[in-house]
Structure formats: C-alpha cells, structure tokens
Length: 287
Ligand code: UTP
Image 1 (spheres, rainbow, N blue to C red):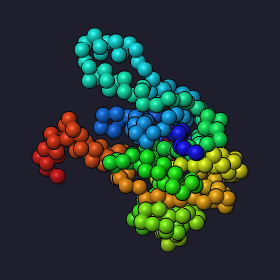
Image 2: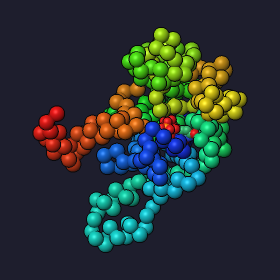
Image 3: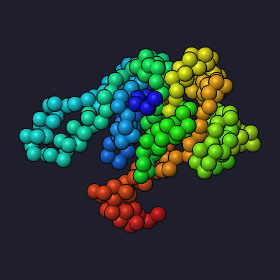
Image 4: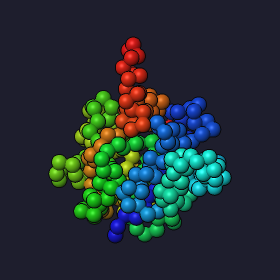
C-alpha cells in the first residue's frame, strides 16, 4: 500500500532551546525565512503525502495558525498589491490536508507517534521530526518512499556519524544490502562509542508499517519516564524486516542554538534572493 500519510511530531518541550521556546514552540522558530514546521510540510508536499497529522501540545495555537488560511492578512496584502507576499502566505495553507492531535503529556517520541494511531489507521505512514532539516535535490521522504515500495518493510533514515558523537543517537546494527540500504538486525539507543554496532545513526525520518502502534503500546516507559521509539522498533524487528536507508542530502540538526545557527548560515548562503549579499557580508567579517 502506498504511503499517503505523514505524522509530524511537534509537541516536545524544546528544552535545549530555552528560553526561546518558553512561549514559542521550537517548530515555529524561523530558519532563514520560514518556521521549521513549514520545511516539514513542504517536504511532505513534494514527497506526494496527501494527509499530515501534526502532534502538538494543547496550548500550541501558533502552529495551527501558521498552517491555516489567514483571510484578513491575505485581503490586506491583496489591497496593498503585495503579490509575492500574498503567494507566500497562501502557499503555506495549501501544502497539505492537515489535522492536529494533542499530546497532553510529554512522554517521549514513541508516545507522540502513538497519539496518531486513530488518524493514521491501518496503513503505512511516514514520521518527520521537524527539527531535522534535510536539504537535498530529492526530498528525503520521497527517497524513503521508494525504498519502502521496493522492500515493503519499515524504513528508517540513517547517517554516518563520527565515533565520538554516536552516543547521542540510536545506532543500527546493519546487514548491508547495497551502498545505501541495509537490513536492520538490531538497534542500540545512545551506546558508548566502543559498544556501537556501527556508525549508522538514526535521524528524524521514518516510514512505519501500522504494526508499530501495537509495539509502542507494548513498550514500557524507559529510564526518564519516556516511551522511546527505538524500543518499539526493537519489538517490531522481531516480527518484520526493517531497513536503514542512508539518504542523499545534508541534514541540519536545528534543535539547539548552535545547530540552528550553522543551518541558518548554510541555507542563507544558498538563498536565491540574498545569498550572494550574505556571502559578501560573511567574507568581510574579520574572523
Ligand atoms: P527532541 O528530543 O528533539 O525534542 O524530540 P524536544 O523534546 O522538544 O527537545 P529537547 O530535547 O527538550 O530540547 C524530537 C521530536 O519529537 C517531538 C519534538 O517536538 C521533536 O520534534 N516530541 C518529543 C514530541 O512531539 N513529544 C515528546 O514527548 C517528545
């Protein structure tokens, strides 16, 4: 069955970005010219996703406001003849058919995904963590949909990570199929560098079969009271094949101020409207 739905998890507390995230959710922080949530919606739209389920905290009104039509603002822009701004505003609300589901308690990524169970139903679906921005010619989710179509099992996006950094990630025990695809034999969450089964680390894109929901329901809360998606994936692995896919493109982790700053510089330099001017500006800084 085709992957038609995507879940965007946006209910986290964003503690690494406090105080910026005290009143504003991390997913609404701007990267160059638009909030993170919009990059995720654009990736869905360009990957052929038909319906998006955004997991939010009940008090997070701004995400819904950003993604919905804004008739008054649109009328004002129209009256003032600001057509490109009007297009930009209209474009956001036309990216996807969106529904919102609340995660009342922040019990981890596995729990956030479980909140989408009814909205997803009995079909395969994608998950996007919007603080992982993947910049590339072909959207990462679109690449992963092709792998899902080819192999028919859950697919997790992976990246080769330097040995001293693997302990921040879920790490895959891979059985290589080809250059970019491996069968997942096991998963280890945040291993010490000498205990990591490989350097292939999980990043924020997944395609799951609907059986993942049963596995999340069976997953006990971990050490810090959260339901980890890697624990549920371990259970799924015992019943179904799972594949790790080393996508084409550059990932930016925008979940911390430094990561966001690096991503802003790299994507700012590529910006068609002001990238050249920005490059000149950076060049004249006495670094
Ligand atoms: P992160 O761990 O990167 O986000 O979760 P966080 O928890 O918001 O940030 P820190 O660690 O406190 O700084 C990855 C993704 O999962 C979502 C987050 O919004 C983010 O997009 N998430 C995480 C939820 O939706 N619910 C949760 O309970 C936890």
